[in-house]
Image (cartoon, rainbow, N blue to C red):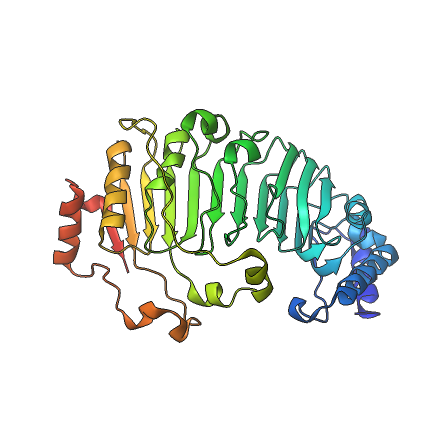
Length: 368
């Protein structure tokens, strides 16, 4: 809001010029939330911010972190912002874009972290970001192309992708998406309780890009579906140390998701992902920890854990958590009326351990 932002900006610039300032962060909050923003509002928010940037360049010159929301920029606006914020280390864009199916190209010498939430970009091109280490992209809009292009990003090690799969969602081929970034050590994929949008590939194709992967998180897989397909990551990532899986039908998120998105992309029924091991007798020597949220004592979970243990010969810890509960879901979730069968007493837990054929019960932790 003007003139307050100008006063704050000039005060920050003065502090930077006269004091030793360690870190400066701007979180720009618009007067309207995104659900109430028209296209004209998004354009006006971007204009207000550009005016603020132009009026207080000294404040932005030393900025380390910047979070922008609800803005529709011109084609050259974001490059201009990055050119002004020469010391910027972290950039987050929430509901920001340059129009429907627009292109975002990023180049910056100091940026180490990028988060993009929503927005209408067709593709985000990370053209030249020599210090970039962490990337998170949530709910990209365009479904017919890969959401990201990786150019020169030699230090990129952590990647998070989050999207609710629909009938029109393009399947992502990790060996192609990550072809230029064989340095990923942490991979977080969030399926938002709906369709899988990652292709289980052969280890021959995937190993070159996952050879350094050490930690993988597969979040919000739909309940009632086979988990065996996730083994393709184990086959292709010989350095993997920890694997964490969450199985959860988050009903309030699923049923209350954007109506326009549903109408445009179509509903999607649950379905198992077809997969067969490429080397049925392969052995993995580095995986030592398996964590599962949403565990239930049925064939899906017991069979999956047994499969992992068969191949992960040095497994040291298995942590099993009860399924998640969202207080906001209320009566939307039919499981609210059906108690969890998570093993809570010693006899129930002993039975699970026996079914798994584990000789060292202490390696299995039940956490309700």
